Amino acid sequence: MKQIKIFLIAILGLTLTSCYEQFDEPQPTQLYNDESFEAQNPDYQQVSIATMKGWFGNISNTGNNTDRSDTKYIHFVVNAEEECDEFTLKKGWYREGKYYIKGKVISNDEQGNIYKSLYIFDGTGAIELKLTNGLFLDYPCDLDSKQSMWVYVKITGLYLGNFRMMLSLGDIPTSSYNAWGAYKYYANSNIVSPIKVRQYVFPGEKVELTEGTNYTDDIYVVDKNSYSTISGSNATKFFGRLIRFKGLKVHYAAVPYLDHDGTVRENPALKNGSYNYMYPQWLCTAGIPENFGGAPTQVVNKPWYQLAYSRNNVALYGSLALLYNESATYTSDHGVYTLRTSGYSRFAGKYAPRHGEMGDVLAIYAIYSKQSTYAGGSRDYATYQLSIPRLKDATFKMEPVDDGSAMWNQWAALLKYAEDSFPSYAQYPVISGRTGSQEERNVAVEAWKQDYTARMNAIADDGTELYDEWKSWFEWCVWTIENTTEESYMLPQLINDDDDLE
Image 1 (cartoon, rainbow, N blue to C red):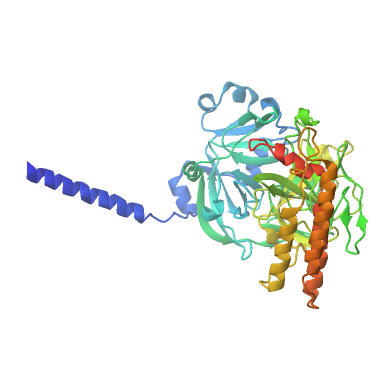
Image 2 (image 1 turned 180 degrees about the horizontal axis):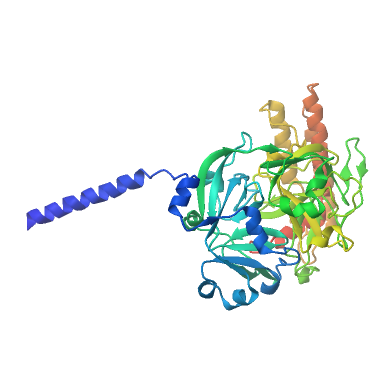
């Protein structure tokens, strides 16, 4: 009996060792091609992305996000009677069959501005896949070398949903109340489990992205003379695509700015429906609590001279207006785009390029609009939006380049000091009943100005262009710090982590 026990223990030890060895040496991820994918999924039929999006039907006014009835989705199923609920059956928001799509990866989420999304393009159209974090590790796309990969996506079991005229593939619809009591309904949700992601999204072979002015090029190129190709009735088929915009101009609207000659200027607002919008700005859709003089669901737009708001664990989207059409008055006019930057991106705190700067932008092209009359007489509330995967994908001159020199280190340290030491409204709140006063803050701001001016003048002029460049840019930065409005410091202190930010 003792010998049998010893034998069994030995066998168990070998088994566990074998398991650990297999764990330590995981098998490489299988990369599929057409033959291997079809061999494993013989009952699935391939359809183009354009065909799949066409099954959705009309996208105008079907993604309003206010309740279930006005936020359309298509549930891809094998048997609708067994897999769909009564509401979906009654609406007819389903399609039966086993289908898959195939496309090239055209996005990269490494720097966080593209968040939990993978965009793919197959020559007929593009689609957003709402997934999880770290997608660049499993589905890489090198936008410098243009080396990418094919992916195969089983759409059966997923939901094709509409959010403000942008279609995406994701998991089940969701609804919730944000921290201000506003009800939100979403046509689909992210597939957050990596295990579940691998059940629907399959990596394929490497491929190189093409770039040009043909519709089938993976990176579509437009400039001031050709942007009409992605505007108006043509726009819808370009949404979700990776587009290189050449020669866009930064435009400040309804905010004061310090021109290169030292003059303070201001341009008229850009209209969004009946509202006047300022740029650059940060945007919060959670609103201001009523006890602080606001409305729970109002949209708050405030000037902010960085790419996004990211301070004290509070992150808010930033928007910067970019124009081809300099005579435009509405955000929905052709040739007007907003560069959207997440407060969670790695470059959120970078200063925005100054008014009038010219540059190229490589970005995912999108729209935020309830309906397709955004360019018509009704002037519905709409913006064309650009999301850059990386900071370098916007080539505007933003700040002197870090060259590792002693001078760069001096100026960078001084700027950090200026930002950190500025007398904020957290220290001198205007809200009655809290410590401090406006007068006290004014005195503190004046003392701060004298202090940073002395520190700036203490940096020796070495006679180089870099010194002049840094001093001019630094003077602009400290001016923007001083002239950012009260709410830019006050409001984020009132926002909770659970607030819904568009």
